[in-house]
Amino acid sequence: MKEEFIRALKNNDLNVMKTIPKSDLHNHSARGGNIKYIEDWIGKSIARPSDKFKNLHEMQLWNNKNINPLFRGLLGYEKRIEAAFAQAQNDGIKVLNMSIDADVIFHYGYQVEKLIDQLERLHHSFAPNVIFIPEIGFKTSTHIDIMCLLLELALSKKYFKSIDVYGNEPTIPTLKKVYRRAKEKGLILKAHVGEFGTADLVKKAVEELELDQVQHGIAAASSKSVMKWLNDNKIQLNVCPTSNVLLSRVEKYNVHPIRKLYDNGVKVTINTDDMLIFNKSVSEEFLNLYDAGVFNAVELNEIRLNGLADYLHV
Ligand SMILES: [Zn+2]
Image 1 (cartoon, rainbow, N blue to C red):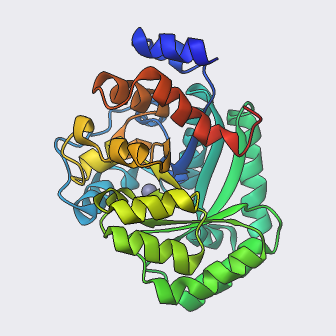
Image 2: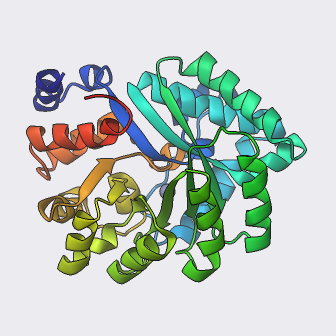
């Protein structure tokens, strides 16, 4: 598979690239579908962002205007999830660690088993070749008491295997209670940090929440000592290059700090974040990093295997 992957990169062959096993470990499910898939469903074209977003708030406004109105109620929600599974299947994603926002339990009358039934149905119908690792996700704006209640509901069935928080950079002391409980239950601990915040915040979040993996974490590249610490502690960063460029965190691919992280021994993976907005698959992310000269093909293959190693014998 290594030789095929390397050849696909060198030939810029997206079709072959899509047949090679990859992972997506940073995927927000409801925004994880392919725009064309949704366009076929609604029978009309959907706007693409015309320029980079200045910040997360600007992206949210654009999303509220252009994407959210397309999806109504429970049917709309399940179509989003269907599209995310279909995208993973189509792109040759072998391991999909996809985040399900805890707020959606509300759609199912707070009966988590009904949500799980639908997730299983959609997984088996639209992504039968994909190993799905369900993740329970929380917005950092959710009140801690609500978070704790939703976590207990989610954990009442042994279904979710990891936890993530996202939105504005987390207030770490508040979240400790949630992460302790998730750790007790054996979940993989992840959080969005270091997308907008600092290297020190990445280290603090990993230390205090006992994270196994960081979503983004690219700010760590500004500190040699934090990168060394992440390497020493085998902390994986699930990086989303196009998201970072379109959210104005990074000017362009060829100066993406993922290179510096890699050179300093930090374990990285390549992921999509929000395909419905950023419109780049994992296969395309690999091709873009290769074309921009950020990594050579052998290095990209090593990064591809990073995302599979915990779940497959590769
Ligand atoms: Zn994200």
